[in-house]
Image (cartoon, rainbow, N blue to C red; front, side, top):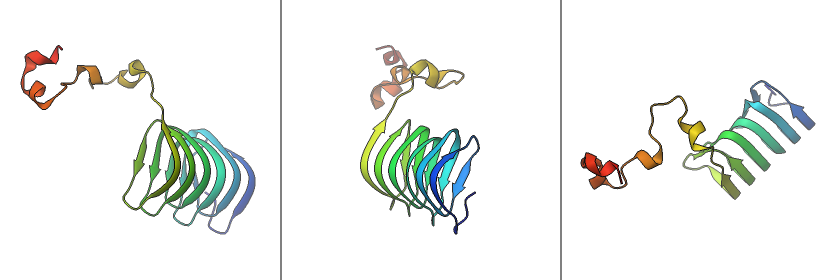
Amino acid sequence: MLGKNVIVRGEIRSQEDLRIEGEVEGTIEMKDGRLTIAANGKVRATVKAREIRILGSIQGSIEAVEKVYIGNSAHFEGDIQTGGIIVEDGGYIRGNVELSRRPACAQNAGTDQPSLDQLPHTMSDASNPASNHL
């Protein structure tokens, strides 16, 4: 954790989860970790992480392999590239969002969930089992 009175300028590399309550300017790389920017946190950086949770403010470019979560008090300006995004009411985004898709075999591997092409296409299809084979 970087406390609220900590200011970092430069590069942060970590293999562990990190919570920022202070200020960071530069680059943050944590490919296998979760980055949380607390409500008082201020970040101006290029960020790469497995998951990014924004409760404070960030300006820059972020890349999250799995998901970006933008809380109701968050302020984001820049570009987002991620596998998924959640934005709470009140969360602010100004910039570009690019959602990337993982291959279907990776998405369904080890789960009992059907792929999209296995789901009914309309509500009437759902009530008619024979129509699931379109």
